[in-house]
Length: 117
Image 1 (cartoon, rainbow, N blue to C red):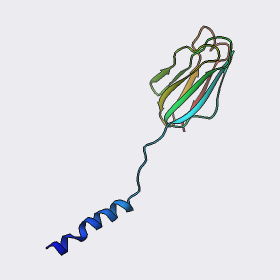
Image 2 (cartoon, rainbow, N blue to C red):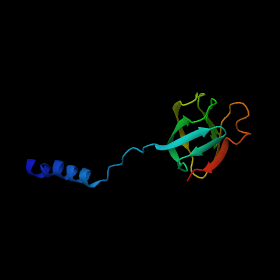
Image 3 (cartoon, rainbow, N blue to C red):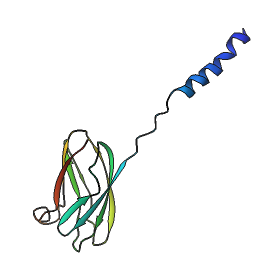
Image 4 (spheres, rainbow, N blue to C red):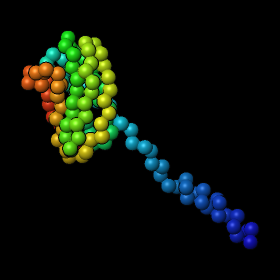
């Protein structure tokens, strides 16, 4: 009986090694630069977990809002020279709008949009 069962642990180990390991998805990092009065993104965000690294390169305080797919993600206000992070989970094929919600900054050009691919 032991001779029949002995190969089973080796067989199970062999199957486990043959199966591909699935790594946890990592967040895409997008650098956001806010100036008086523009916002630039380092790349078009893809669907999934995205970390926006927001840097205020202007003289005025700014924040960063992202809306789409029934969700709104928003940062706190960041002062001149400051930076912060905002993490969002984006849905594939959804159009997202982003803007600075401080005062009239969005009307002055601090806005844009993208479709998560």
